[in-house]
Image 1 (spheres, helix red, strand yellow):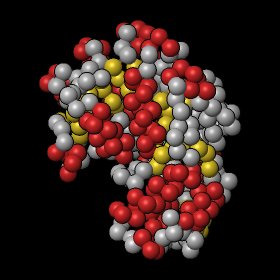
Image 2 (spheres, helix red, strand yellow; image 1 turned 60 degrees about the vertical axis):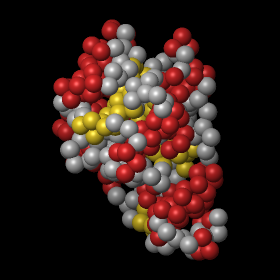
Image 3 (cartoon, rainbow, N blue to C red; image 1 turned 180 degrees about the vertical axis):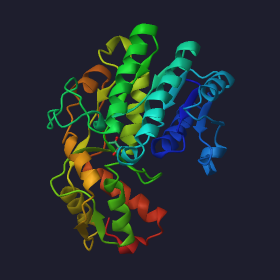
Image 4 (cartoon, rainbow, N blue to C red; image 1 turned 90 degrees about the vertical axis):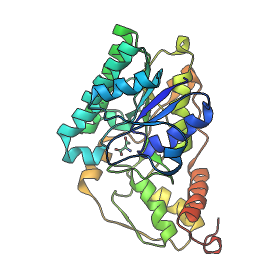
Length: 325
Ligand code: AKB
């Protein structure tokens, strides 16, 4: 990787991935691709090039690839699971139409492509505990349908045209930098904000709803390491199960309470998010990622919680004495 285009660079993952890649490849062009209305700001705008790249517009992708001699594309454009249910046609247009546009440019201009899949690519018939790498994928959400289609289309472009496509199935991602938006796992980010602000957290999912989650530094490392992996070791491509922790609302709440003893939570279920979460796995088996490219997470729930709380305290300007970290 030297010259990289990040499509969706101002989103939850893109904001941090762009900065990480700029730090790792100071001699390359790491291009922040954005859509109108979501232009890069601050350090993201100042630390490197950016280009308007709407994934539904193949010419904009091709122009940025040409201008910056891009060799690798990170395709991070998507509507997350809950919001996608209210706009399924747009979710397909971005998730599948946008991926097709990206793969076609990659085929013509010889780029590698990373497109994240998700725990949302699984469905109710999938084994829920320690979900295997290769298993039944019959998701019931449009988000999941676009993710399974994306996995298959990416594998097709690798097999048929030799495009170097690679991917991981992200769990819910937790970060203090850019907020997620419209996902089923967003509660696991929101709960930290409530704890720091001294608010009672209204949890949209029932106790006992387990899902895989991951701290953003591990997710970013996975996105880089899979693209740098030795291709001769890869049996799989699109897409690898990766995992670091699985918890339900009670477990994360009690963990935060260890550091914010007065923190309160109440359950205010959201039927849509609950139905989606119930159809997803409780935990993934990431043996293949560990064996094929040495994947290993660094953060567990306790380490992530301490880091999240101390960064959010600074971000939200809450005095240190008010918290027992
Ligand atoms: C969502 O909740 O939609 C995403 C995901 C697990 O892919 N965070």
